[in-house]
Length: 128
Image (tube, rainbow, N blue to C red):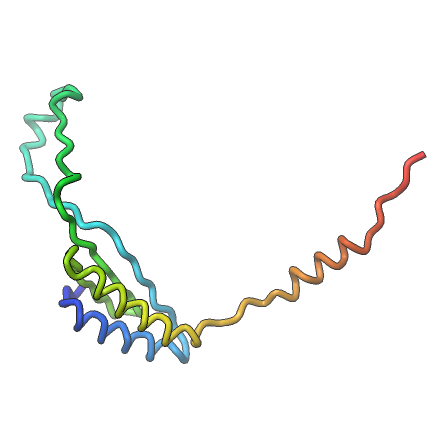
C-alpha cells in the first residue's frame, strides 16, 4: 500500500474514480490512527494482572491523525491526514466524491413498489 501526501492521494483517488466509471468499484475507508505503544516482552507480562487504577487514559489530550485508504482493483493508496489538515482535506474529498457521484448505479425499486401494491390491494378477511 502506498502512503501518499494528501494532495497526491486526492489526485490518485480522482484517477481511480475515472477508471471505475466503466466497471469496477472504489472502496474507501477512514479510521483513526492511534499511536503505537512501545512493545513489551509478551512472556513477562502474560501472567500479570493489571489493576484498573494503573491503566492510563491519556488519549483525550492528544491529536490523532486519520488514516484514509482507497482500493480500486489491485491499486491500493493511503494517506495520513493530520488534525490541522482535516478541514481542507474533507472539503477537497467531498468535492471529488460529488463530481463522481454520477457514475453510481440507480437502485431498482420496481420490486419494492410491486410488493407494496400487492399487499395494499389484499383485503383482510372478515371473521364472523
